[in-house]
Each structure stands twice: as structure tokens, then as C-alpha cells.
Length: 78
Image (cartoon, rainbow, N blue to C red; front, side, top):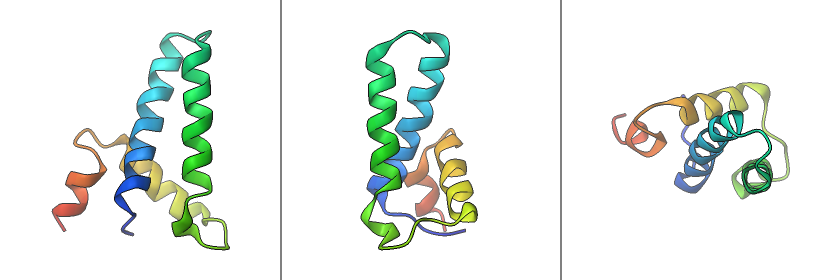
């Protein structure tokens, strides 16, 4: 598994949490705006450099965001 910068992993974790909250409250403009900001933050993160992330990298990042203990704790246990 790849290692991601802490700020990118946290943004993905927050994206997942925001997405779940938005699913419960679909009309909430504040949550939609936050989801958009987090999407931009993760997609254009400096760690990707000049190239966009591969599908495999996106999948791994999304899996980090879905873990109950959060991404930072997972990275420390390696």
C-alpha cells in the first residue's frame, strides 16, 4: 500500500464523512460546498505532481478514507 501525506489522507477521511452526512441530508448546500472543496483539495494535491493519480492510487486513497480508525493511525502501524 502506498503512503500518502497526512493532509491528503485527512482530506480524504473528511471527504468520506461529509459524503455520508450529505447522503442523509441531500439538500444541504453547506455540505455540498464542503464536498466540492475537499474534492478539489484531494485531486489537485501537490503530492500528485504534474501527473494525475492512477486509478489504483485513487482506490487506495479512498480505502484509507473508509477506515474507521482513520488514515493517520493506519500509516503508523506499518
